[in-house]
Image (tube, rainbow, N blue to C red):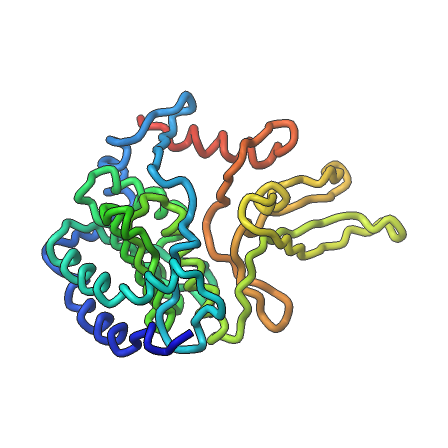
Length: 311
């Protein structure tokens, strides 16, 4: 497609202009504990004592997600809709700068991974002009871990659900470790926005980002009757069973020392030696959980739900 559709100089200027707006007086940094109270005010208490929320948008807007930058990160085949979003991106970026100065935002900072090599620090900015949006920061914060002194890099995601759905879009600027989500109130945009950035940046650290669940399986060798440990990768798109099989006990015999251990259910970073780093602090279940078929997942969820009850 024509080079003129993209405006790299505009993206660079936007990133520079954005920096001074990220610490404005309209932005309040909040911890996970501080987010709880405003978040649960718009939630519904379940019979297990945890809270649930409903969003107007129930899935990611992949068909409205575009990548802005040089040729290395551009898609080869763009729909007319995506071309139109890219053409209008400069005007939308100017609008974001204005909104970042005039609307109330919450900043929530969490960490992806926990190792000695690659632990992206994730900075989420959520517009809270609509108080229901506190839930987005609170929910997303539970998917990541606390900030540590382990090495970065730094990622930023700005989420403005109040943008009109006519202009619903996600603008990704991988060269600046930056993502913008506009016109959607789906928390999955925050979750996958940072993970997508993590997969892209992992290549610069000589790792490969994989959309895969991982687990450790300890099973007896039928020939030697000795216990062997296996690392397992489970590849699959969203809602195809990665979480289910990452947590599944596989019918192993615990009385004979066999075990399965959950490592990760969504995104991991593969190293040259065959080992992999994880990304999140939980698993993300999109389908019903049956206590007979997904025993470990069901009981883990049940225990967590009760542990989050208010005193």
